[in-house]
Length: 317
Picture: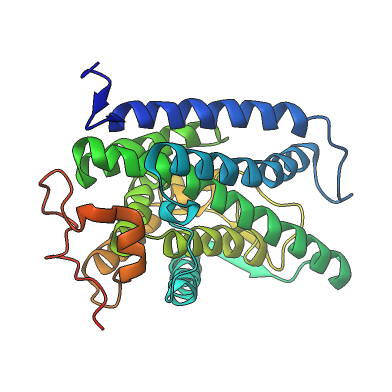
């Protein structure tokens, strides 16, 4: 029994495996339901319609699964996975939204200055663009929340218990990159960028012990990239956008049909962003989130000093 239990509880790796099995089961079930849904908007393609319904139905399922796992296996509330409305949650979300916007605008701006991208106003009516914008706002919002719950939520947190933060960051960031291999037009640069942005988002969770900061970055990057600028998002170009983008040039600079996420310019921006969020004294966990996420463990996680209280000080009162 000691193989499966530790101090009267299932070992962290088993809890991680249970969470993965639960996520796969939920995703397959939601996928079957999503294919039966009728198109919600006439301007969405069949593929985007399926993506819309899949993500919209998946978010309550993942929240329910996370609550169940947290209560049954951790004896903690749902907020412990990182979605608690703690005193700084709005600040973290806004910082994430601003950071994600600035990062993708920096990439697009660099492409524009290099003469590799042009942006113009769309020919569609303002009303149609506005309605499309509302649907894509919802789509990218729930999609970002879903991916954060899967890759920086309960499974990631249990891997920290297994082998420490560095181990968890490496494993889940690689998986984050592997999952995006399903997207069309991917390249080795796009896969590398996806893995590295997984590292950045994981660090944002570890610095705050909440998902609001990585959620803000994730959503803003995708929404501004796809709807505002009209650039492909991970190989998917939206049928309606605020601006129309036309990019041309070397694939390794522009990302080609995959979009800026396949660009070497994005690699540079991700590195800069990672260094900032790793080192900034403005990013820290509140006492509420540290207590929710770590409980009695405080800043000690398997003896690993990285991301501990000594390096990332908790909020002072």
